[in-house]
Length: 503
Image (cartoon, rainbow, N blue to C red; front, side):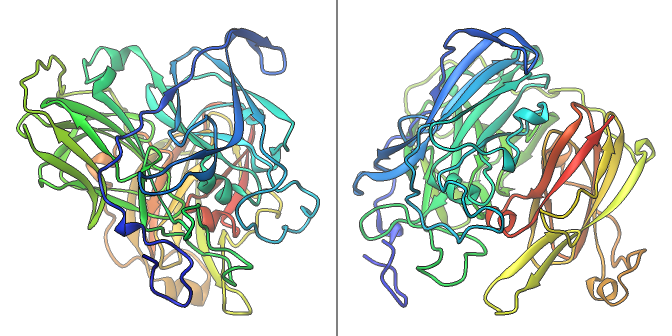
């Protein structure tokens, strides 16, 4: 049944029967040998080759096969599982056809001859040399490859990979270029958390389908102005629309990442029961946090322990407000559960204002274009192509005060580093715009981050008309990186800026 509106373009995915397809599990990548790379300084490390290709898969029992792109051969995400401190080489190979199957924008200035199926993979949340970061201008075309080195000098955490090619990243992610990357360490192993088949990585996002069951993204020339945000009506988990998973009546560990272009997910269980948050973007928290609802912005991750032991024989739905994401079918048979929910998880030193060597005020801006049809989003009123204005010293600590002058919540991501959220505070946007001078006229007291935000992060939600302060140790590597809004439509138009780490 088509959606109502001017034209019956899309299929009404809400009418698809829920919970008829089993949840696909991520596909673990196997080491394909060991190699060295003098360019990357890697010596005899595990080597993987990933072919980026166009595939056909079925998103739902009642849909035909759909064309999409993948790092693997199905719509299920691929998964790397690596050890902290042990680097790997990944060879990303572009086997895509010369034409994109989604309607692209007119080429950006200076990019008229760039191939439409260009790609570059960003390992989101990874502390890597800039040559392996997936810088948007480091794209490569079909028939080419890019060898990246990931040192994995990080605590155990759930990272994820996605495309970041200049001008087309929102289409490439929408087409399916996403995957998991789990880093393990001894601290995590010592905690006796649910593991093996009792640890479920869940990649959640939304999509739309046209009347032929193919992926549909609204964009010129079909719809006029470019989409300032994308919100689809098909809720997808690991490549299936509203799947189900059989679980035993015991504790499970759910690793969840929001990989939607623009949609925020407000996660809860249909039974109303609480769960325990044990980790966020950059790994374990200091201690579990009991919650009944958690909001994930695009690119944010959460690490949950859900106890199904009191729900034998019941069906439990993972929801986002009124939207159904997936169903857990809890078995009736008793089961042994030797896993634990520890009272403490990892020692986390909270950074303070006094440790920062510099504070920067950074603005998040929106401007209507002359036609009134679209909006330009900027950081510090600068475009991507403007010269670098943020140079930071390697191993320094800075506070970035992110002043949101807009009415949107923007999830801001910094490449290469992890940070901590200090506080949020509302201010008078009108007064600031009238004078364009500091200090800001704050309208309330500073608010501490939620307990689930007190660990290490790499994405932070910046609410409207508020200053969100983050404190950042610039540890890792010298080179050029970037920071941007992770609403992919905002990033594309032009809420993305380079920054440079100098020695």
